[in-house]
Length: 72
Image 1 (tube, rainbow, N blue to C red):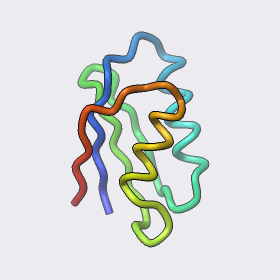
Image 2: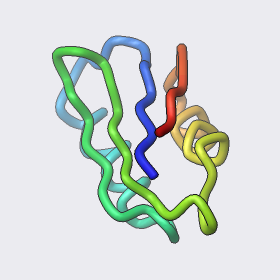
Image 3: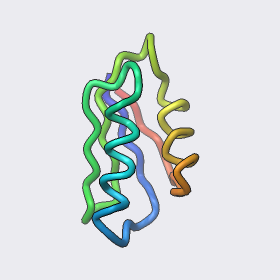
């Protein structure tokens, strides 16, 4: 499954490392990539192990606002 999150604007490279590092270490996440210029997080994951809402929760727990979530 692919999930895209629209987030607040990132201000520094450490934001990207923090989000990608947390998501990529999460069970069920295959890949997580932050797109700095468009303020999006693209995640490929196993929906049986981690849901889009759980991914959103992980990002929000790090202190970032998630504006929307789309999955396909």
